[in-house]
Length: 184
Image (cartoon, rainbow, N blue to C red):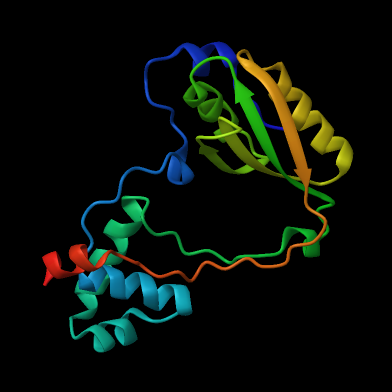
């Protein structure tokens, strides 16, 4: 299991270095070409840039450059999506965490962990929600114990996944009507 020293991540004022799947920033303005690329790749992640360009009425070079920028800005990530339970992972859970201090510090630390595939700071009953994926229930227990041991964690509540019922990533690049009009 991969962990990071708490002293460096929980006391540093520097933003965390989380790599390509790190903190998600507010989206920059997307135009119709950007949205078209996103929607085409959500329908078929292997769609050719040539076909996307033809459908959008721009050059293949434009699609290639826009695709790179969308990836570099952490707006787009093309990946093969799997059902972890179907692959033999025995323990997937959502863990709700209550903190006594700023939840961002806890979220920063847990986001570095290999087992955490989704980390979000929330409002409501929990300050942080973390989706974890483990090979077995013993590993899940180890991860939840690591979470409980973090400074400022008051309580946790784990929701063990029994079956993955729906998992879609095809919502497109939805924008509000007013935002769409601004780009026209």
